Length: 152
Image (cartoon, rainbow, N blue to C red; front, side):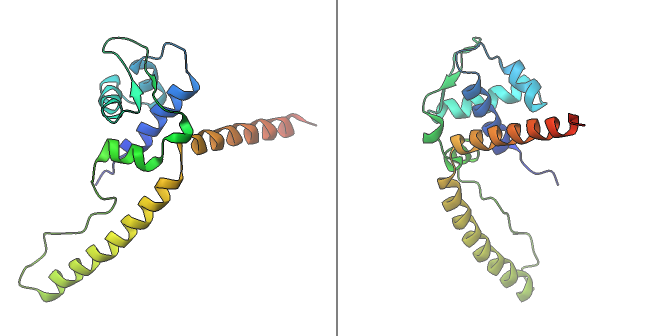
């Protein structure tokens, strides 16, 4: 089963727009970075626009953030892209005549709900700015490593 990368792709789009503020950024350029097709990027951007996180005009390469990166949480982006879709999914197609099949799945659903609540609380504390800051640190670490590797 393939898992969804919509959240990470949407965060990638927002980071790309934030770092390229003031530049002409096309869906094709973002798609190249995400390694996907421009139609998929436009679909995600439409959801982000509907959620009020970006501005964009059809056929124009002028998308931008409507809020500062420190005002956009991972939960905001998740809700914009996935709505109320849960992170984890329990199996609802078990044998209805088997008590174990029914009650184990209902118990798993309870646990998954607890995990969902904890994840959402954490997602609410992480902003796009936090991701951009980590990006910067990773670039710095890479540069430092490269410099060490070049030093005889």
